[in-house]
Image (cartoon, rainbow, N blue to C red; front, top):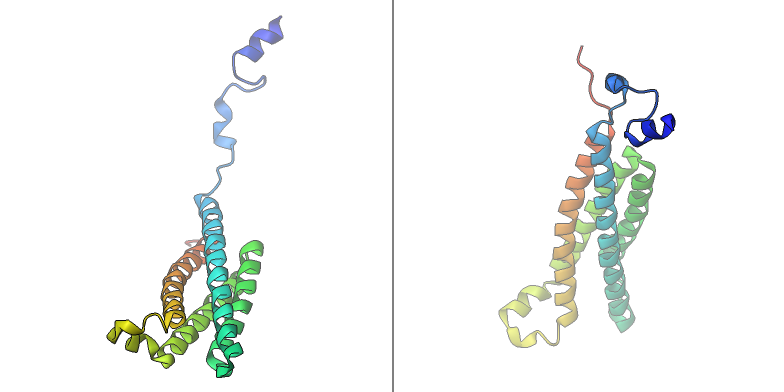
Length: 173
């Protein structure tokens, strides 16, 4: 009967509440790392979808007989490898892999922008709107590249924040 009354009071037996000074407190940066990893996962998935659209676009025009575009194929290769490295770095909390992913994916996005700029079709279509129907795939590629650039900006800021929270805090002497 005595034990039931103690258990129903809400406090475990053996503690009087004065041990709060000895309990561990989890640093807030661990929560920030977990949030950053989940945000980075969503960004990597978004980049993978845009990468797949770019692959389909490139192979569509290669199969039409226009010949392979070296810049587009390089962008796809670098982007695909960087996505694999980014996911490994995110899963295993490896700062070096995240840095390589950040640089490589940025190079891949810049190559995509160069490929769209080299095509010069987007400017012609905007000047003569009647040609939109004939160049709809080029417009889709330009939109994919523009949105991919915005996603890359968010990715770089997320990785920068994640890396700063993953590294141990600096000790002051």
